[in-house]
Length: 186
Ligand SMILES: [Zn+2]
Image 1: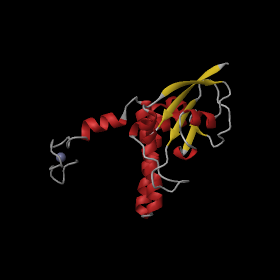
Image 2: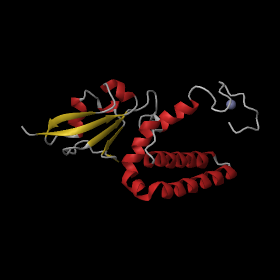
Image 3: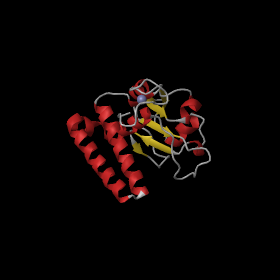
Image 4: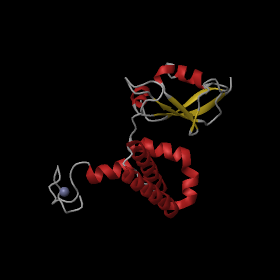
């Protein structure tokens, strides 16, 4: 029997369930997503979103190809099953953005991506002026997505640098919580 290799990338809670952040699995040629989930011991309801090579895939009967990358996102416990919020780490957010836009972002480069980031900041400013909560939320998502892009292009792990700088204390006064005077930046 011929086999092929696929890369499994569980996100969020599925990491603990599958015992690690990612792994290569050897499966028979022609294995479908449905069969793969079965092999991993995952019921259909245990996975909310399946992405193959960074694109959302809803047809679980589709046969996989050698070297496909399969990202698995778990539904939130107690959440509304069809459109619930998926808890993400900053690293997972960067991975999602990289899978979606990586090559385009690299080509645009840091300067080019920074202009798009600024444009989204401008749209957030406009949304705040209009005080529309839904619009503000959508623009915050855009700003965060472009921040993740900048970090990807610059090869920066956002979670790591954020924790180093802010995880334990204010970088200005070195206290937790911050005791800097109100007019100081932090
Ligand atoms: Zn401070």
